[in-house]
Image 1 (tube, helix red, strand yellow):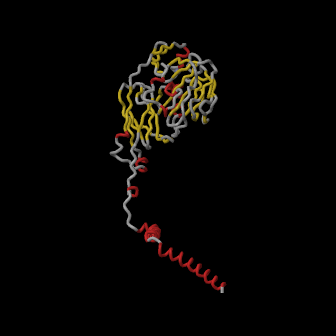
Image 2: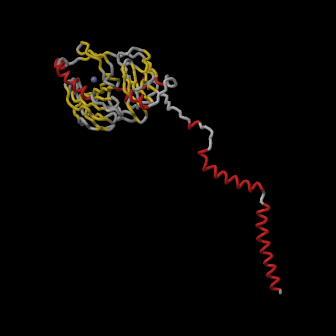
Image 3: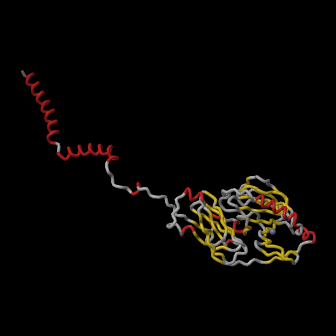
Length: 347
Ligand SMILES: [Zn+2]
């Protein structure tokens, strides 16, 4: 009897427990919680049907034409006759400058080139204008109005006077300069070496001065030889003892290394983007045509070969076929050229 009562009590407790708890859950659950559960389900459902529902137009999804304004910069913005300026553009194309067109070369930092300033350039403001090539027109969407001003810049050319040098040479040396046939042969070799330019820049960072020594003849001197007007000295002469090593100012490829009539033993290094450095009157050549040289490599030794009055290096820099002042490159990086380059000149 006590056992049956106990069973009844236990059964009653269990029954109350089950129905009581479950009843409390169904009956006492707040309506807002139930709704929340339904909304959650609906929200899940919405996720799957979203693409078919009308959505608010988003600006990024609109078909916007790819307009790229062209940025053009020049360094330095103030320059001098016989110097060069460095141009960078955000897009490939051509540069028109002083009545000529120059092709931009592609580099990691943009599209670049050097522009030569004639040694006879009068003080003026010269316009540097970016124009598209057929290729750049085909591959880039170019806006005609928005970017019109950014594709044109200018460089101010200030006056610079060049000194005169009176050189006295022996009768034998004087005769050398009259052998025009041999001089023309050298000229042909010179232009041949420049005929197949490497488009990409081979240089990086600051250029080195190829030889330490006394600057015996500066760039641009008007030269009289034995009292007769001879030529402009479109190079810099650095006097140093016979046999002093001459180093490559930057990475490049040797495009000429041979003995020439007036220049003596000469090396020409190509640095890409139509920039060349010349080294003449060497006593020894340490490189051959085709050699890839690194900045600081010894390329030869100081000498007095060819038309020369003593041991020195006749060093020239050419940009797009124009001889420009080599000093601009000594210890400097064209990518970091400032507003005016004159402060670095050692005159
Ligand atoms: Zn010289």
